Image 1 (cartoon, rainbow, N blue to C red):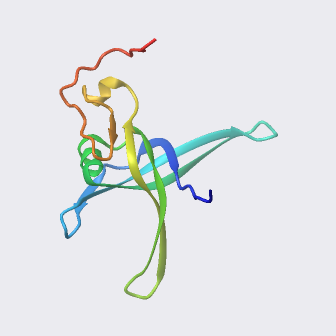
Image 2: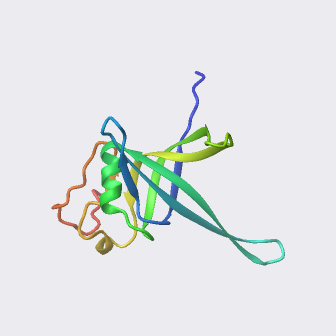
Length: 140
């Protein structure tokens, strides 16, 4: 079998509130940026830190959920695929942008921060805003 795989998973914090717009056909699209930080110690024991920024695009129902429930600074899990866009600007300059096209999003952090909302959304799913927040329950 010769299939490819394009799957990305990140956990980070939103750099700003999500921005939503609509395509000419009326389909919602939301964009936001996520900062993912990592730290490590070098061989000489010096501590280093680095932050990578990712542009995220969500479509359809997931776009509406992201716009409604995500806020700047919030920790979030995003799963999707990488997409590269290329275009020329008005001056003829070539531009390239790599972004994550999300198909799943999960709000992370303290459940109280989620204002009692279901903190998991997949494309095509709406959160259960009136669902009670139970303590962690395990089926075993």
